[in-house]
Image (cartoon, rainbow, N blue to C red; front, side, top):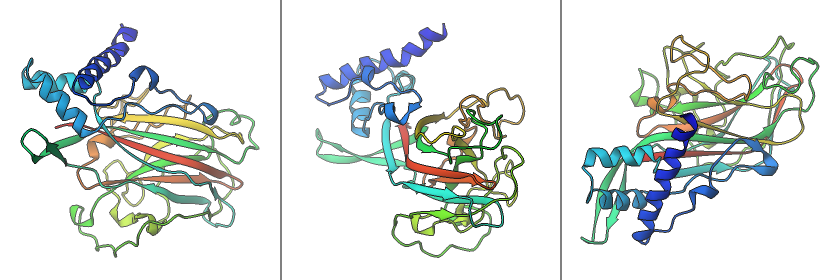
Length: 325
């Protein structure tokens, strides 16, 4: 049953893509775009790259045959969503050398604001209409590795090392509890390398807020981070995205996708509690998509902790998938 249900979205996508082709819309073949986690040498291909134009045209055709409530169910079940992709490909080393607090952090990528609507040009009436959209999925792709060695044999070849990535949600300060308005941020620039250091290693760390003031040039400001009752320390909420494979010099590509409904693996506690898969190092992202509102920006934070640990980042890509609201 599980294998059959996993084929349903693929079959629906193929049917909808055939529908789109009848409308003269160019779309990729879904059979060539299924994704799995892999090494950098065989990085996964992109999922379907559709635009709001595809969604609206296909929806309007389906409305000829089905009622609206069924059409939207079909589109979502087929994962027929528009994709907005952001990426940064720049080699950066985040090292723990040189810091007394044993905690290295760097904002590597900040996405554009989450959309609420898109303008759709309707050729039939020669006018533009506003199409409301909602985030259905956020997919992270990280290409990185750690320092390539580890003094603890139990950690080698696992995902329990001390370098990883986190996601934060940045929200305009006026949407949060009283806090000073941040100064305007300069235009985005590339940040080369940040080095910090750590105290003795006592095992893999739990998620914790990093020091403030990281890379404001990218648009990051700790004042803007969304607070949560489940957060630690100063109240900022972080979601673990992916840990590096421990003690390897090989760049590995990891793909982590979070949907609107996430059940933490092996967890029957508070659904907001942080959880990750020990076998793959991927975070479950519980509550992340539900927390996003229009105007938010997603930040990807690179982390390293304890003496000797380094996070070698080659590329980070984030795709936000929107469905019709």
